Length: 324
Image (cartoon, rainbow, N blue to C red; front, side, top):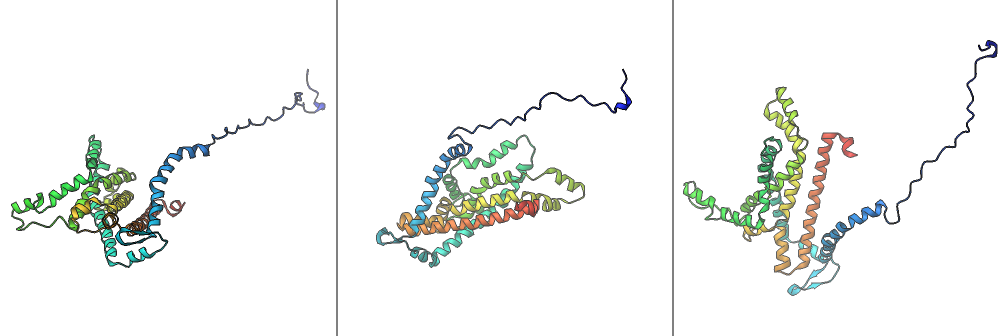
């Protein structure tokens, strides 16, 4: 049977099925009461927050409150809310000399520690030897020994009858022993070795951007080794160097054992001065003020570190990505 051409085009058969109503997506059930993600996160953070509150926040509040008291005779403390102790400390030339010597020690120790630790960290980060893990373990092995024991070892090395002086005297290089202990120089030497493992670990972890392929590409284009190091290696390793500098500087500012033992009571830094004021002189308000000044120095150092870090990020990723 043929279709009639006059009847027009054939129509598609109509769908006689009823239109199905649109089904709504299944409702998401609310979490049971007390089991929401916010409360779960708070429950997980509670032990750590409690530990920080008991071991950091409350002692810090106590130090701030103690710094507002005044010292009396015989170690007595007058409970007041006064800035007189701050004025006494800030108006004393002795305490300013202590602060200056503390910062000077931190700067020198940080400089020499980075100077001797950078080649070691760079070698450990670039080596492909199967002994790499063992070498890293050997580099940080001194951390297994107490800093007190290591400081006593340096006292035996740097002393008048120590290894260095006996060796130089026996070789005829010097006539009289060098004064390497009980002074500022000995503290810098010992502190540099003591903080080297921290600097090495910090730099190794911060050398993630260092890619050997970039060095090979620059060398294949005819760049000498000095140019490769100056234009590629050093900029890519600066974040790790910056982190190591912050760590070593903070540790050297707060160090007590090495300045006390190697310095022989002749090197005055904030850590030793705080101990003397609190334990020997029983002047707790002055010790609290010195602690607040040490925290202020830490704050300045961390601020400078963050600015330097942002500048490095802007250099590598651009100002837009660094600022976002």
